[in-house]
Image (cartoon, rainbow, N blue to C red; front, side, top):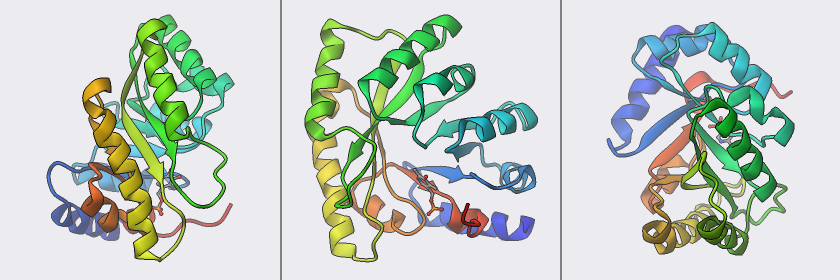
Length: 220
Ligand SMILES: *Cc1c(COP(=O)(O)O)cnc(C)c1O
């Protein structure tokens, strides 16, 4: 297992340009798998469950940067605010207010990405472009000093249709380009194991890759 993970990571790193950040999505995977990647030099890991990420943070080396990539319930923000390095899934104004409130309590400015709906599938979570804009603009009059919006995140439809993937990623890239100067956006998080080459081609600078590094996950 250890050798496969190292090999997969090495292959990925040789494929992607230096300006693309790789988030190794370790959800459901044991500490040993994470340590295998860690020992080959990787430091950025993504998790989608609060309890699991918090446990791994407690058990694993402290220089790991933990990215939260799943839907975050407001009542669980307090558990990850002390250590999270980037929240990819800021998907509501209510959640933003709670992240700011908990950030203030811990005196930590929390870096976040706005999750934007781009898939054709009905998506439960995420801002529409209009909602994202009105939220970003609201920060001018109602600043949230302990929350910093660093960029945008999107998930494409689960499909092998490359034209559709390109279309969905391009939509987000266009919105990112339109807003990045005004709102200081630097990070565009899009692309997973099945679609990261297309996401990068379309302009992603952060990919979230799980199964292509750690192997497939059990359905749960
Ligand atoms: C699980 C997950 C990933 C990684 O998925 P893979 O297909 O295993 O690469 C990326 N982003 C989010 C939001 C996820 O939940």
